Amino acid sequence: MHYTTHYDSPLGGITMSSDDAALTGLWFDEQKHFASTLPSEHSDRPDHPVFEATRRWLDTYFSGRIPQEAPPLALHGSAFQRRVWRILLTIPYGKTMSYGEIARQIAEDTGAPTMSAQAVGGAVGRNPISLIVPCHRVIGSNGQLTGYAGGIERKQWMLEMEGKNLPLKGE
Image (cartoon, rainbow, N blue to C red):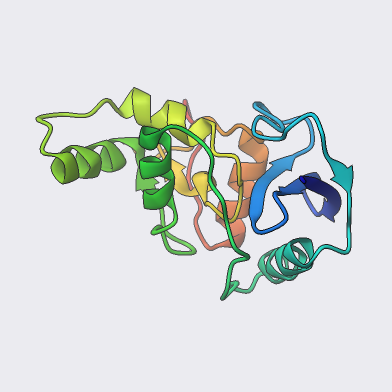
């Protein structure tokens, strides 16, 4: 069975989903690819332990402190997407990584001569567990803020809260 609940953040509503064992989704309401991994059959269960752990993580994060332990995660996507998302999990609070750096790391890890930064961008944009899998910490190769499925203003807000002040693309 899949469950959902809602969380009110300083950046707007967030919908969470769980497969009963782990967090499977965390989306800003109405973001691009919203609920992309959520089965049509699900029910609301705000008191689920996975959601309680996720709320603690989010409360800590939005208070400006570094969350220590993430709730259990279940990332559903292609093998390439999961590889990208695992790299996102290594980006520390207050740090950033470019799409190109992630592409180079994947190429190096797989022995490929090159990897497309655009393909990485596609996988980053389809991350089903925003914030905890920190896709907001991925920036353009020129150090500027570029797209974010939850909205560039949210990305900027989170990075500034984490101590980063980066220009928007085109500034």
